[in-house]
Amino acid sequence: MNEKKLVEALKRKEDWAYEVLYREFAPKIGSIAKSFLNTDDVDDVVQDVFLRIFKGIKKFRGDSKLSTWIYRIAVNVCKDYLQKYKKRNEFLTDFQEKDNEEEIYIQPEAKENVLDEVLRSITAERVQKALEKLSPEDRLLIKLRDIDGLSYEEIASVLQKPVGTVKSRLHYARKRLGNLLKEGETVER
Image (cartoon, rainbow, N blue to C red):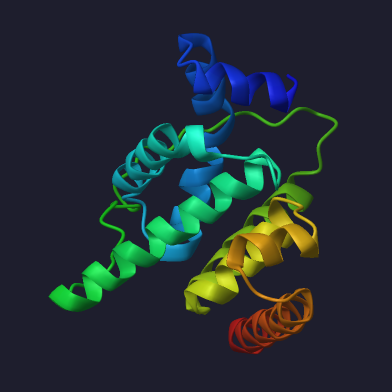
């Protein structure tokens, strides 16, 4: 989909354009909210971001990529939520009961090495736990660069920080993540 055509269709309030935008960006916005706020309750954030997009699309000049503009809105909404939580002295928590979830066992294919799959699962869980211990900014930086694959310039635009600052903070965020993973490794062995 051509971004310029999508933006023009959004400005004309065409239904198909809103559907494409939602399908493309809702999971990404939800992921940003989850990594920034460290909570599974992200539906309100996604809704607020899309409201801001719909209200502000006519002002979008195309100076940056549409995705960069949307990420910037998502980060601003997340910051607003953090401020709101701090004012109320609320804690962000994940209320899902992971112990009570129904587990589905899928028989591995004969070609798969079960040990490798188990090790990958354990590693992913360790990384997730370590990520949860990082600050919201560190989680966001790692997510935008290492998971979403944004360039340093795009991240700098989203966070409204100089590229050098983004590189430096990402370097230290990765270092803190590495240290947390090493600490967990020594504890588990």
